[in-house]
Image (cartoon, rainbow, N blue to C red; front, top):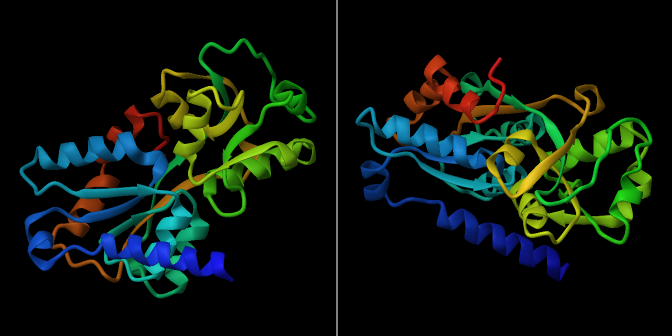
Amino acid sequence: MFVSLLRKLHLLLLAACLVPSTTYAQQSGPLVLAAASLQEAMTDAANAWTGKRHPRPVVSFAGSSALARQIEMGARADLFISADNEWMDYVAGKGLVRPQSRALLLSNRLVLIAPAASKVQMTIRPAFPLARALGNGRLAMADPDSVPAGKYGKAALMHLRVWSLVEGKLARAENVRAALALVERGETPLGIVYATDARASPRVRVVGAFPAKSHPPITYPIALLKSATNPEADAFRRFLLSREGKAIFARRGFSTR
């Protein structure tokens, strides 16, 4: 119970930090809550939007689950971009998004990574020797109980019949970028992240890609929140969904089809 209360207090404090003052909201671009895996791409998109003489969007990155709960706890933001449909559905089910604004923005792939200097070689297939490759080390991945990247990873490992062999060897991270960092620092010999995360870091290399059919499609929905007040919020949403906006994401390795 005490841990639960601490978690709620933490979320309330995070939500409070995201509530902009009226003056600030008028002087800045829209406040966007975006999945952690979108850091480089959303920064590029914000730069492009600002280059068109718009106020710069403010983007807050975290795991989709944490962002959804912040919205539920009262965070007053303009846009939400989740790394799966489930957490967008969760927020929508609370009546906190504008339904007609919801759209599919992007998709991604799931990969197994190792530190750049690692020599490990492996073919990802049913019953592949993942546990043996880990040895006494751990497998870095976002929390499979709540974070999209972790849930996709668990689904893939279950499909490939290796989950039961590595479940006790996980290094659970609060989001996919935290999992990436564990592998970058060599704290874990292997990790599961999105293909775009691996592409963003020169300190890791891709060991192999998980078959697309081994997990649910990795999709990123976007929607305006009911709390949206910034006059440019919907225009920025439409820019991200435009051909120009999607080209920005494509350059970072996302699929925009």
